Image (tube, rainbow, N blue to C red; front, side, top):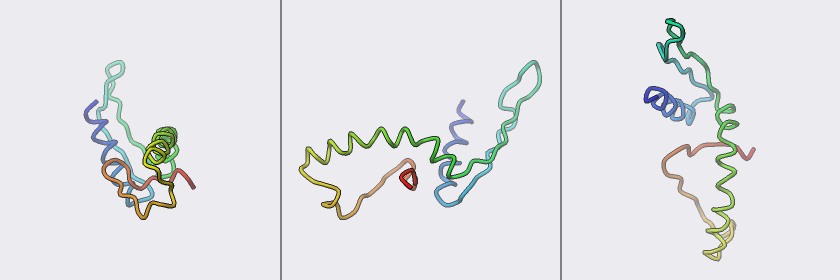
Length: 92
């Protein structure tokens, strides 16, 4: 499982600057004594689609925090995104 997490993290980083990335994990598991390898191409569009529900779930807490602070989106001069995926385009 650690190898899968590391590959996912690396893919996420690559997709911040590229439109697609190749994920290759040889010998991921064995099925009936045969090795199973993972080899796939992940596009930024597919990644955005996969995480859209996670992003959507942040909308209400963010709106609540802004309401509690007494501000609107127009009051924000800039937003600093730290960690995680900072270049997700799910709102296009």
